[in-house]
Length: 188
Image 1 (cartoon, rainbow, N blue to C red):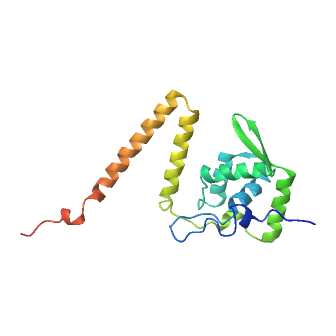
Image 2 (image 1 turned 90 degrees about the vertical axis):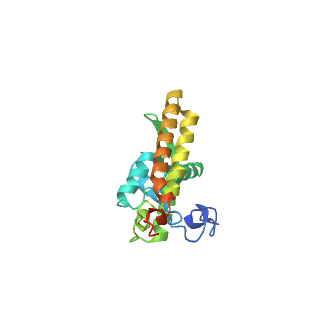
Image 3 (image 1 turned 180 degrees about the vertical axis):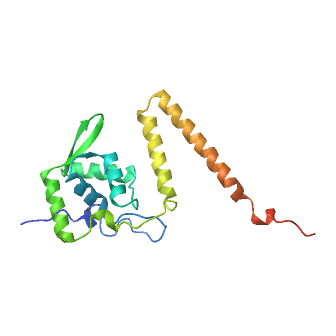
């Protein structure tokens, strides 16, 4: 009996209803678009995670720049499934398709149809101000990474960057803390 194990909409994020929430103003790729995009790009040439992120931003004409928090777990899942393999090249992991990955991609293309748009073309456009929360999570992830693998000097630099960003955000928010009535002249 032949089983198809590559249905992105159910397997990529844990089931047909996993992660569905209303509203929120966040712009995300369609379910399975991250894995499908990775497989599609890696079918062209091997790439590292950063190259995948920037290539997706370029190909989506700036509408989608997946965060490392979206790309790297997807790469890990695909590698765990045997769909891609990684090798260290110049201190970075470079990923490439395996035969299983090519089979997954062929199934995806068959499922979507030959004339379907690439997976990154269906990402809604956003003005990046709407995904501030995602940017904060990405920053926290990078800070944790520096703390885990960075030198003492790099950790100090990261602290300074975070302190400067905090100070700038506090200054930016300070005028918003005042009520509009406090700026109006009184007529007593």
